[in-house]
Length: 404
Image 1 (cartoon, helix red, strand yellow):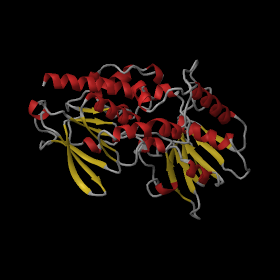
Image 2 (cartoon, helix red, strand yellow; image 1 turned 135 degrees about the horizontal axis):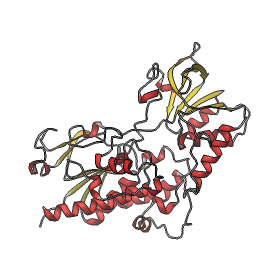
Image 3 (cartoon, one colour; image 1 turned 180 degrees about the horizontal axis):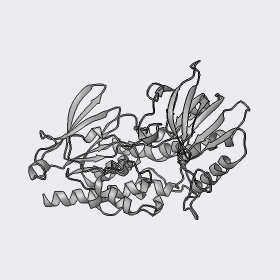
């Protein structure tokens, strides 16, 4: 009897778990790797409520496994609710059927004994198994796989605070004083004890934090908020979509814009500006941040106690450095998918189509970048898009095996 192929799935976020589930139900041998605990990326924003309803963030098969019947349609969960009601039960179902390596980091991947430049386009390369160098409490070892589904996401790689995507002078020195990404509950409590905070970013993470700090004030000593964005719209920092299919997103945009344009003394919106330099104050208790206007080129220095960089994320390219991956020069996503997304530029994330499996393919046969990782620096990814990607790729794997 022909041996069932082994599929390595990297990452236990929503897409990684769905990939493992589908592969198991198809009859493949699965190895699931997670460098933290199950759904570690979601845990970072577990206090935040999703814009999308539960039915968009789950699959019918997954809901059957997790006994999801009877839940209210249209309900938008918090990250914590999503973990407890769906991701953890799904991971338990997977753990009962295959190997799950948590607290295990996949450090590097190669194609058998071949180097990156060997056997270009050759069947000899395609027939080599993938070698995954993993590291955990037991040390380092090699795991083999016939296919790899890379669902590693991007949230472990926050963008720098400085303009142009690189650190501004002083940023690396004071990095421990900067919060990158949306703060967790403990960090928000920390910020609320400060006299002032600078929030940098024009996306929904920054808007969520501004709303959190200003809409639910309980004591007068909470911080003055300075909100810096590199662009602006007539409506404010965020573009408001007319007839937005995600009501929660529209509500956040409207509220955040109203706050930014208000005459409140506890909020100052600094539009069309970037961060030029950052350093500690003379006393070392706060930070001096030099910001430059993109319209006037005028620079000024402001003092704040804390800085939060909600400046987005980018993928970690080191994992696949020895593989023949064709990545987009602009987004770092797989080239064919990046081209498809660029062709749909201007569309809302809910309107973007997945395309076909060809857009997920690259020269390294049997290696697939899925989920948020496949979008690279493009932030329009939706979980339901990742689930559709998994379905396409598993169908492609079946075709490859039938031909082989």
